[in-house]
Length: 155
Image (cartoon, rainbow, N blue to C red; front, side):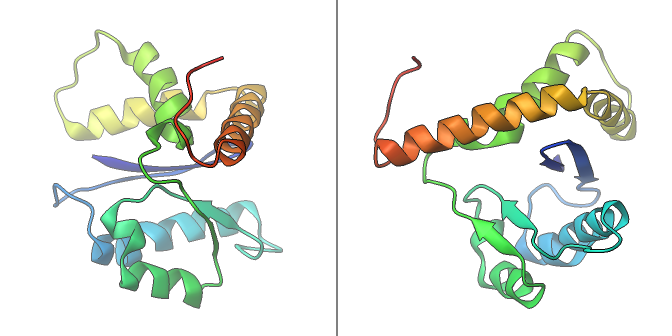
């Protein structure tokens, strides 16, 4: 399992779970998020993570008190994720589908090789594709807001 973080112009970080099979708030706040924030700080040396908006789904580790305390302590603003809406998570609707199409039919002997292949393909996504994906994501989010969270079919 991996945790993937992206922004509107590309890949930020992919963090594999090495010794665990599930994401816990302890792993998320001590291993994952510090690495993500360090990656953001490298890309934005002057502002670091000031002004950063974090969108993650409603997984238990993301909503845990320890996670909320960590994010509040770092002054990270969060975007709410509507319940039961996997179609509103950029990684689920774009990144994973894009990379999956590239890796279709391939087999890997180790999880390290799998993560390496994922990174190669996610980092190779052109910047214009990222921008397009985020525009579509904003459109989906607005549609959800306009329908007050009610289910809707593709148009």
